[in-house]
Image (cartoon, rainbow, N blue to C red; front, top):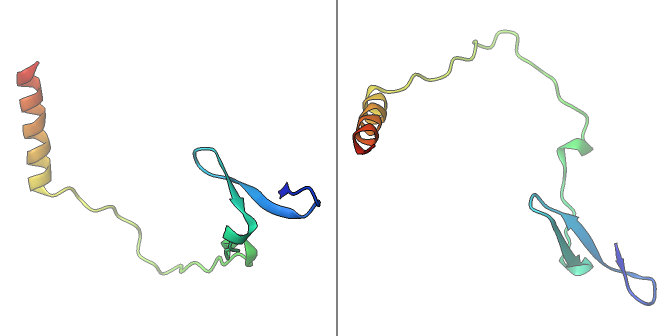
Length: 74
């Protein structure tokens, strides 16, 4: 917290992914966080097994063509 000369909270220092920010109390807003709730661990035992999507043929061909062009430039 950032306190004024009268020892009243006037602002806050917020942690971000790239450092910190200082903001006035009027600019702050409480957010609902998932950690404020009890965990929900209801898993479906009958759910199908996860299978990642296969790469489409066009994407595979394009990736190979890019590799060929890059190797020709070297």
